[in-house]
Image (cartoon, rainbow, N blue to C red; front, side):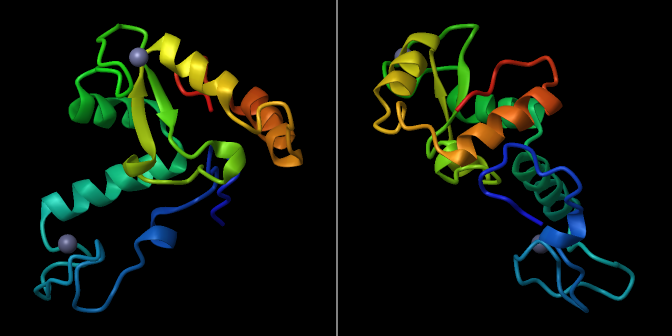
Length: 149
Ligand SMILES: [Zn+2]
Ligand SMILES: [Zn+2]
């Protein structure tokens, strides 16, 4: 099940997000598929669906790869291009911003990211969800500090 307060959707399978639809492409494009195909209209449909699946699941490297394609490493607040850019959840995880597709991510430089984190109105009122996210993070820490709420 998808949990919007959890950074990683462990156990989520592709079919939950893209169930097979008889005769139609599973990606949601609405195209009819020939009988010779099982699930996808085209490899583009399939690739896009797999990428979205990986992003919703919380796959750090997929998120960073796609976000870099979109932003080129440039901070959306100040425009500076740095090597240690952060993939920021626009709506933070503890506000229910997890399990979102790329539209909930933005490139931020470290300075702007720190500023956003510290100026967030709920920063001092850590919710029980935030506590559980911290716990999740310690369990599923993949050695990458790149994505932080
Ligand atoms: Zn499709
Ligand atoms: Zn910045």
